[in-house]
Length: 303
Image (cartoon, helix red, strand yellow):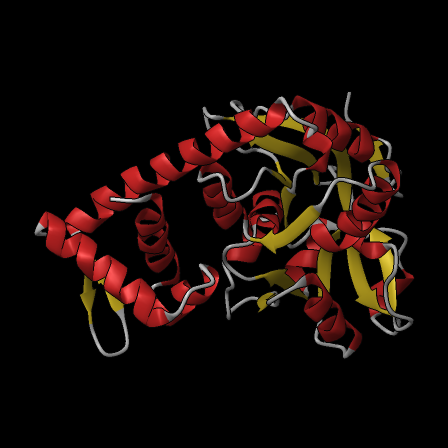
């Protein structure tokens, strides 16, 4: 058994596809397939049921993959500890951010980090909270930027800033003339929200539960979009209105107006999350200082 074999097994489990798993490991598909078949034969087990258009993980495979993730995370931790006594500001840093934060924070973060620490190589990834958390726990990412709440006993979170939510409407929308958007307005209008998997969707529905009902017998309808940008295009075309974190409303289209929401105004807290065992304290301090030094319009820094 080797670490590479465990990496290949976890990659197949993540991608549910041998070719994509091989690409993520930078090897050929035959090499990956042979390695996994060898592992199965050596241990007299079946990890994956191979079907024409799908791969199913067996119960035995699920247990082995869970342990494999832990082993790979610990192996990465050993590498990080070994590097920590060297110049840790020269070793690659991998940071993830959720889709509704990345476009508005990462450009400023990348620019400022590179300016202050030019020798620190940086890789960034945008994804859903669940996927980023899985990669963080597996050691595939060093830190992630997400919205609270986030509960994991092995993960430390550091609040960065709070931001309130706002409404976006087309300029010719009747409600665009109002100073604020009221709850009863949302109950009457077509409101676009993000699709399943986005934590911002959950936060909006927590603030306005009636949007989840999607009743075709009422005046209000709820439609889904794949991204905040997509929803803004739909709003500009006259489909309805949407709710945004205020950082996403700083550079909107000419055909869209932004209006505050009636009190109580929903908000979210954005935080940095990292493993409690993360050994590169110089890097952690550099990232925290960089993030806290970024000024984002409409946000309030966490204390």
